[in-house]
Image 1 (cartoon, one colour):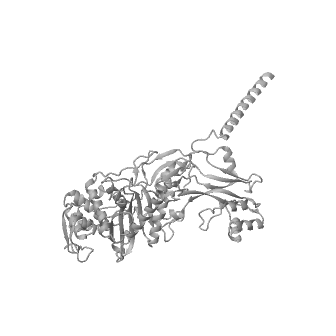
Image 2 (cartoon, rainbow, N blue to C red):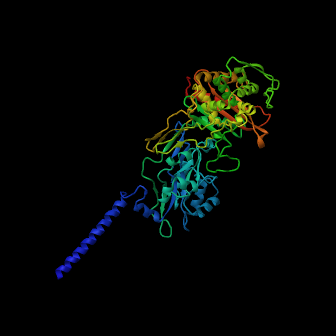
Image 3 (cartoon, rainbow, N blue to C red):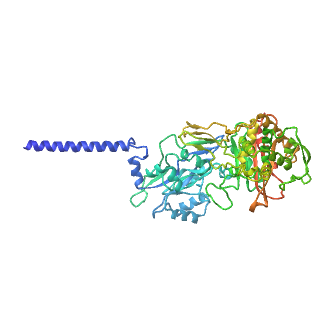
Amino acid sequence: MKRAIQLRLFQALFLLAILFGVAEARLAWVQLGFGRSETTHASLERKAVLQRSDSLVLDSGRGHFVDRNGALLTGETVRALAAFPAQGGPHGTDEAIGKLADILETDRGRFQAWLDNLKAADVWREGDGKRAYALTERQAAQIRQLELSGIAILPYRNRYADREALSTLQAIGYVSQHPERIGQIYGEQLRTGLMNKNDLIGGAGLERSLDRLLKGIGPTKAIQLTDASRRPLEGLGIRVMAPDNPHYPVQVKTTIDLRMQRAAANVLNDHGIKEGAVVVLDADNADILAMVSLPAFDPEHIGVAGTDERNHALLAVPPGSVFKTVTLAAALEAGVTNVKEKFYCSGTYGRYGLRCWREHGHGVLTLEQAYAESCNVVFAALAERLDPALLQETAERMGLGRQVGWSVSRFIDGEPLRLLPEEQPGVIFADLEKAKDGGVRTGSGIGQRDVRITPLQAANMAVTLLHGGTVLAPRLVSEIRYADGGLLASLPPQKAASGQGAISPRTAAFVRRAMEAVVTKGTAADALKDAVWPLAGKSGTAELAGTRSAYNDHWFVGYGPAKGKARYAVAVLLENERVGLRNRAAAVFGDIMEALRRIDSERSPKS
């Protein structure tokens, strides 16, 4: 009997030993990190640390952007002064805090108030309250000599590295809170706790279109261990905890040339332009080298009065006489005119109330001269000869009336991708049936009525002509790489062919010749007479309707150099210029082309 009791006791103890062994093995497995699931990035050790700690996000883990030469556009890491709540205890002596304020070159009272009011860990920020104040090496060394508690110098990543350059580069976009959209896009991550409905996601531009690739796998945090009363634990200091995946955050290499972006923005500023856009494309492959939009914006303060987060380079507006480029191509393609035909302009068209901009007319003109002089009478006549469907079809063949920015139906993650989703397609005729009316056709033929195009499409039209009628897709990103340098995705140049086909190389060649005549002996001859590079292009003045009838939009679209191999295609749009003012767009175009020429010359002195 006694032996049976001993056996049962042994069996019970043995079973308990097995159970404790399994539990300990499982705990060790998880503690060492082997037991993580794909939806959990913290071991029990990390969770235990986080239970009683104050944390500060140093880096959201979001991917960043660089220009085509590797210059940072976002993701600038600075030395920052981080402070954790003291929970009633001092951060240091009054003398030490005073010295710290002096090192930061700020008012002592203001700095002490900031420390006293801390509810959560934070970094000392610049005046706008968004960017971490960047300490110099000397400041950091001075601060380290002070005896402070709950204060440390830590690497902090400011999202927007060069706000001056980015202020006119709305194509990059911004991040913001979108609770309703985050639920639609990241429902699974919300359910598993990997994301919060108030997390920042891309609100516009590349920040939005590439958000699913940029968001990363988790933040880097600074952790200060505390006791149950949230008082710092002596001797344990501040720990930095980061995701251990070497692939993240990713780096997006854009096609933007930061120097060209600044140069174009400076030209607009020198001319006193407040509203408008400039697009600079690489004539070889339609890469977007600069995309300036005014009014400027602050990616960290969206909606501030006097700013505009919309990208005006992607907004469709009336093109004015720039659209005569399409009318010319359509008339040649349809055979309703030829390069030898001559016209007569008396100053008035004789119907629809349409007149030429030159009061007494141009007299006898060749087709090339009519384009160079931007004669409304001749182009109204050409438009009236055309079937409206053919005019619209030609516009589509030249990349107008549709989105042309780089896109794919299936990207590396299996989802569609359009780099510039805000690009408006524009329109040629709002109603093709109504366009059979001669008045509608003539108005559209000179770029008025319903016609709307974007500066991006206008610049790309010049690239199309340089490529003999082949439409390319303007590209803003060339590749995406992992943090360790490995290639995640390549975005090669691509075409944006129309289902309607393309204009013929012969037509494209004649239009280019006519664009050269605009500069050598036409409407832009005076504005561009001092250009070092030979240039070509087309000006336009678009009359605005309704509440904006007292204003015009001024355009110039062209390329250069016009002799030899063209390097750049540029579209300039100056919005809301007072009626009666001289069109300054050609002069702005000339100054931008000169800035581009100088940049080229400095980079390749022998060219």
